[in-house]
Each structure stands twice: as C-alpha cells, then as structure tokens.
Length: 272
Image (cartoon, rainbow, N blue to C red; front, side, top):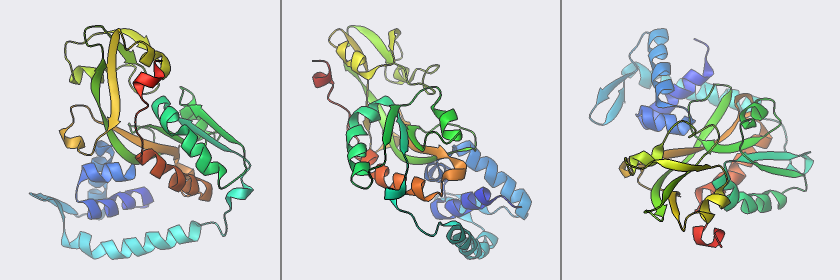
C-alpha cells in the first residue's frame, strides 16, 4: 500500500473518529473517506475502526501504527518544504471566487495580498473554465462549494452556509445560478417544496434588483449546520499537486480567515 493520501485519511479519522468530520477536514466527500477506509482495511488486513455510540473507535492495531505514520508523514512533509519563500518574489497571483464571496470578500483579499507583495493580482468570478485553469496552473486558488471533484483538485473545507427565503414572498422565485454547482439542483425546495423558479440569473447584483417584486434564497454562514434545512459547504480549491507549494500555503493562510468572516452583502444597498 503506497497511497499517502490514504494514510492522511487514516490519521484524520484517528483524530475525528467520524467519516463526516474527516471529509470536511480533508475537503473530500464522505463517500470518498468511506471508500478509502474500506481499501485500507483490505490492504492492512485489519478493521482499523469499529462503530460505537461515540463514533469510530480505533482498534489496537490502529493505535499502534498511528504514531509511526504521523512521524513518517511529518518527515516527508518537511523534506518537501522549499528552502525559502517570499511573497515579494511572486510574478502574479490569480484567484477565482464564486460571486457572493467575490463581492463580500474581494476587496479585503486584495488589500491583504497587496500589504505583502506588489505582484499583479487577478481576481475573477468562478466560471465554467475555472477548474481547468486550476489544473493548468493558470489559477492559483479558488473559492467554491465543496463537491465531488477529481482527485487532481484539492479542496479545503472552510465553513458551512445555509439560506432563508428573502424578498417579496408573493412574487416569482429568482434562481441565482452558480456555475458548476446548482444548475441541475434546486436547494430552495428544501425551504419551500411548492416554490418554482421562473426567473434564472447568474449575476448577484441583478438578482438583488429584482427583490422588490421577487424572492430568492439569501445565503449566510451557520454555526449549527446540523440544524439547517439547507447545508452548503464552502472550500478553498487548488491543484492537488500544488497543495504543499509555498505560494499556495501562503495564500490559503492569508485568505481563509477572511472567508471565515464572510457576511452577505446588504441586499437593500445593492438594489438601490
């Protein structure tokens, strides 16, 4: 067994004792964690975890190999670290953000980057080509919903959002279309099963201008996702092979705290 990602899954399960929590920690789907655990059980010829009322309880074998694997992966990580990194030496920084985050967090992200480097900054809205641009390294980092993506894309869970119906509830429902996410799903039906979208837009400002006569879902961060009718996990995305690159680690450390402070743009001000 030579899959380092599988060993990271194992160590994260040791810490969280939950496939759901491990999935969020690693930016992967719960099904991926369960599948990886199943393969590890075959490769190592041990159940590794047994289910209990408190979650997943590690076996004695799992407990015995945990410290050895932690040490080995730490040594590998140290060996791969670059000797030196300076933001001042960067040629360019390119980010793609899903539009609500672009509006609410974009300026603060630019200000934070500019305080550390004079490199050109390109900050754009996530589009249908963003994922391919990540893979060709034309985009360094992106912000989008955490969904099932190929292993070539690394996703780091940031937080969970939810939504409420907002606007003129007697009017038409406006569906705000997010590329690569909700074109074919209707999360708003979890809030009102009778709602039918009759207007479709992909521009946040235009959507807010319609709310005197229409309504939509207003997205916000929730501290209790388990109680929310709608759950939407957000993540930082990059090319998997770049996840430990000094530039990417620096950008993640800079941007993640800004995203965690996300608050929705005031709809009333946008519509004026």
